[in-house]
Length: 270
Image (cartoon, rainbow, N blue to C red; front, side, top):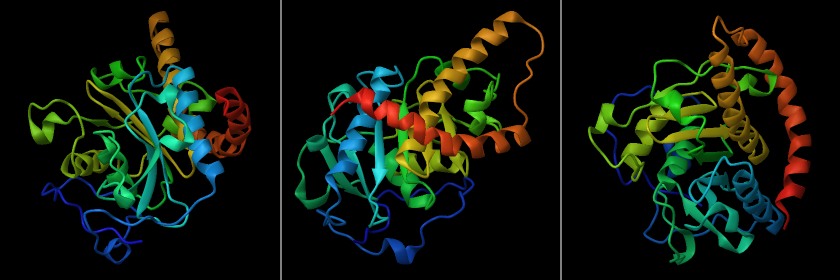
């Protein structure tokens, strides 16, 4: 199915990330968009399990969310209704178009910050899953000038650097929430082609080419932050991964991460 242009047009000049969906891919839409088509229920169960597992890991608590692009309709994505992540089941999953309107007239309450997900999917054709979290060890790196660095091989995806989105730079004083398309586009401009972006005084976003990779990155961004806090406390230089080491290690992680998912999926239960 096709989604219309964003309902909130962003006039800023932030760097546009590569591999954006073309206007031809987006087309026109209505107030109650149609579904992108049926999907295997197992995919929705995996998405719900990802939500529960992220809660078990402390990456999300009562807040935060994970989404997945529709496998057959790039202008649609799935995310749970507004619900604490630990409570999400497959029946709680909603379908959205890229304007973040629920499909088929679904009237259940949706997350306010679904625009993070919709605008990333609109701009990044390579992204198939998005995690937004407020994991506590990560938040300080959005507040200070000390950058997050890749402390170990499982966090290799951070080695090229982690940008920080400061909503105040574009919108001034706000409630800090990405509550419309305009703010979502501003965040995407800072994310650019990276796998993770920090959000000042808020949290972070991790993206991936599949659900498993996005969850892996969200988990190990939090783990990496804890390790960096510990390493910094020892004093002296930190021998973090170089960008080249990160690139090499991340290739291995992409394959091994799916093994981790087998365990995590079982841990999250049905």
